[in-house]
Image 1 (cartoon, rainbow, N blue to C red):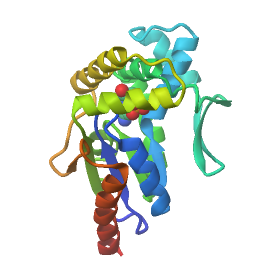
Image 2: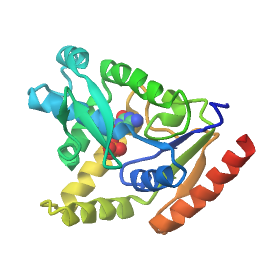
Image 3: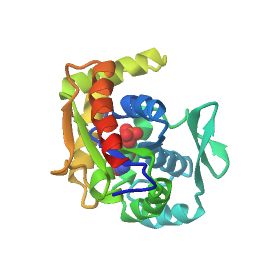
Image 4: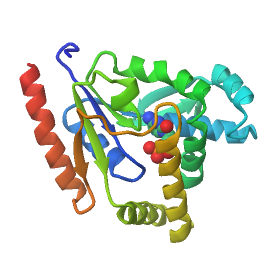
Length: 229
Ligand code: DC
């Protein structure tokens, strides 16, 4: 599909498979927009928890969807996420909010509310959209689809080290349990479950460095861009 000669590229996969890190680097390298859709669900979860709304309270979550104005802004080259004017970019980066986002993302009203926002961001192409249902539901006609995965032990280790580096109080076993449960929730929910499509390129990042994954993907992307010119 041609979008003013710029492609729609999707990157899906489970938590801590390396999606965000490589998508960010690649989008800068080819001057594409990086759409972190997990951040949208996290922002929503953050607001819901602030109002004391439980993840199974569909009525209040629906109401919150109507009140919430989410916007993505580029500040100093990095993407910031604002909810009703409040910058929540850093506040949403905890495993608790990630877990809550996973629970809340199973609610149909929440997925519906965030769908148009994601499609609007990508309709003109020139985007790397990263999440769980990019290639299946949000951009099923994407030009190029990737699915990243890694052994669960490696993913837990990565998330654990990331938390320690940030100075968070991390417990390996808690991180492990949260990640495993989150994967299960994301793969087994009724709408838009995490699933690899037949037309996506699978990359196992377990034994690869960030640079190796980036180079592998960049090679494929640059070829696709050339073919599209
Ligand atoms: O990628 P992440 O860890 O920031 O995402 C947090 C949660 O948000 C994830 O566990 C499930 C949900 N999510 C989703 O349901 N669909 C997406 N496209 C992105 C994230």
